[in-house]
Amino acid sequence: MTSIGESLSGPDVCSPKSYKTFEWSYAKRMVENLKADNIQLAYHICGDATAIVPDMVETGAMVLELDYKVDMPAVKAATRGRATVLGPVDPSGVMALGAPSDVERAAREAIDILGEGGGLILGPGCALPPKTPPENVHTLIETARKYGVYA
Image 1 (spheres, rainbow, N blue to C red):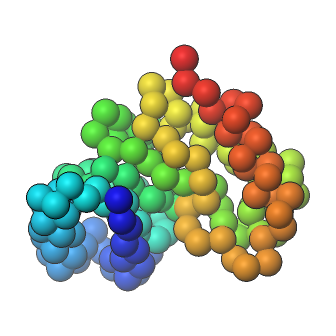
Image 2 (cartoon, rainbow, N blue to C red):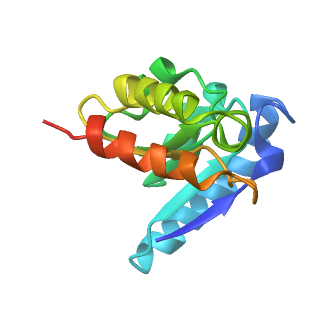
């Protein structure tokens, strides 16, 4: 598996129409080319990608790495059985600047909404800042172990 980040293609920067016009076909072709070589893709778009998640699913990417800004119920509806979500815990406001209790709360919310029926890899929605407290990383992992077990 490999991953890409396409930060300029999200609705926080450009419209969903621009994403579909300028980015989508390249991402779809990349997924197809990688799959031909038995390589799966984790596809990240920064910000509130809710409006384009259905299109991201249509690229065929196995994993969508999504930020905390997304509407989690809408994302679950769009990805259920079609793609796995990686994220969506806020890497800055929660992981880097929050307390362990904030990390647990955000992680449990993601598990409760996105974990039902599978299809969630709990993690930060983007790269962690270098000064993220180790105890917050440990809290994320422990919360996943405690509450993220599928039936």
